[in-house]
Length: 134
Image (tube, rainbow, N blue to C red; front, side):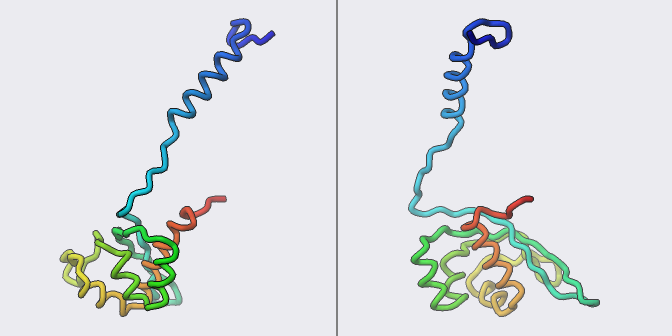
């Protein structure tokens, strides 16, 4: 005989309720043809004394398939970025003015090896499910 919260034979009800609730909380996987998402990017730049300064911005990435990602990667970093990056927020020039997203601005920034490393690392993190905790 099951007793839950003082009610005899209540366990089957709670099990059915728990299964129904867990199923209702699940999200269905909907494959969108074009999926754009915002993702944090951290750029580690060398600084005096053998340390690194970390700066951040939010990139707007377009999800591409695995095969397309590999093909674009073979063409070069800028060709890859032209497809996967569709915007950003939080990039400023030396005067503190917001740098609007454009292919030309991206081309200028992609000459910086620390910037390109941070952007590509952030995008590939999305494949891996993000940062793993302990």
